[in-house]
Amino acid sequence: MNPRAILFLLMLGLASLASLMLALHAGSIDISWHDILTSFHADQSSMKQQLVQDLRLPRALGAFITGGLLALAGALLQVLLRNPLADPYVLGVSGGAAVAALLAIMVGASALVISGSAFIGALCSMLLVFGIAHGQGSWTPTRLLLTGIVLASGWGAMISFILTISPDQSLRSMLFWMMGDLSFVQSTGMGFIVLILGLIISLPIARSLNILTQGELQAASLGIETHRLRILVYLLASMLTATAVTMAGSVGFVGLVVPHLIRMMGFSDNRILLPAATLFGGSLLILADTLARTIIAPQQLPVGVISAAIGVPLFLFLLYRGQVQRL
Amino acid sequence: MSMLLETRQLSVTIADKTICDGLDLQIETAQSWAILGMNGVGKTTLLHTLAGLRHPQAGTIELLGKDIGQLSKRHIAQTQGLLLQDYEDAFPGTVMQTVLTGRHPHMSNWQWESAGDIAIANEALAFVEMEGFAERSILTLSGGERRRVALASLLCQQPRLLLLDEPTNHLDLRYQHRLLDGLTTQLREQNKTAIMIMHDVNLAMRYCDRALLLFDDGTHKTGSCGEVINKENLSRLYDYPMRSLKENNTEIFIAG
Image: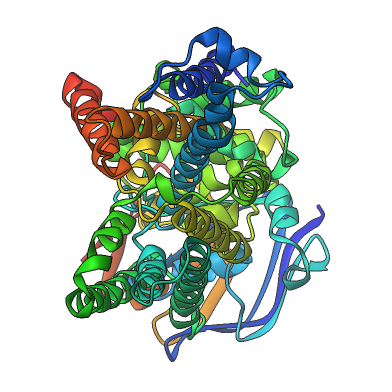
């Protein structure tokens, strides 16, 4: 591993910590840096410390984990489909989750049930795409992509149908769910475990993924069991996406753009790209969520709006600045 | 001479077309084979079958005495390597990264390329005369340059048996000769073997010692180049009249 890559990952790690601190500090009540640090080991629970421990910290961690999951899933799917336009939702996982979640919202279920149905919906969609695309044995990226896109548009139609027949009072929370909203975050433990597992599974296969981008035959001739590898990557990326969608609805943009941002900075080796995208996606979403809840406080914006507002100009700027030839 | 790759009664078909039937090949150390035939006769499919990427309809392929169907892909890749006809790069990467992928079958999962691996890659880049390109993005290369990077990647893999699908494709005349000359010399020195699909009969005559002719009707002929490459066989092979010219004991084949 070259020193430049180590430095880059180190800087991203620091940026993640810094954005986490900022998220704990900023809000309707300013909490001093000193209070933040003491709130972790103090026994007495002042109001400010409770605010940090019970509200801001879980939400910031939720944002980081969601961003990390999405960026990692996006990077994996771009390699699997050999398509730079792929994002975590391209194969319909979020559509299946949305249909199930909206149905739960419509019948007035609790937040926990909404999350649970979203996860089940995501899993159903994932198995459906896998079963259909894999049915005849041949499993080209194009076939997988087409199956996913067609199924996703089917989910889209069902979402429109549900929105049309839903009573007005549940429409707002439905829209927020679909735009991605971190105020739904229930617990971060599950997401954290999935994220860590995702990294542990994907890092040892990262070098094989580098070769997979050169085509399936090339990968097979270099000794990679491509069939097994692609099923593993598909299941892994789907689980990461399902977990992210369950935590925060469909937060757009992070999964598509963060891997490209890392590639534009010159790190296209998946062994660096995958952890870097995870850290970068996490920090980006923490910052976006912090802005989303402070920018026009007490009104809260959906985090997807802000992540796009930060990410789109950044991406276009890098593209324009002449890094195009790398892409 | 030891046996590297051996086929027994090999039969390969694709979409009801017979590419070969009852093919017995004995590929030995330090040989250089040419596969000749018309477009669409199945040269590439046969090469991929020999590489263990497809299952044959019947017959066996043995690599160093072991059935290739029983060997893991990784094990095969440590012994033989394949130069593909075309490359589809989906994402940016440097020339050095691409060449280093050749080391993959020799490395464990968590291992990073060592200084030794990088030295091998640099040597391979020097062989294809692309030393100055190490940090260039592969997406900016021309067809011929990309091809040479692919060859460097194959050399970096250090296989004992090289399967080359039209190695001179995309290359200019000067470089075709420099490449084949350098390659056959290196193979001879290192006791390695190559099987290459060729379109230019005269290049095959000059740089290969053995030939496999695949005819359109599913039959084949094997033997030394001198035995099987002649006017009659070539006219039948390409379904086009061929004649030969002789100059200083070198025979050259031309159409017409």
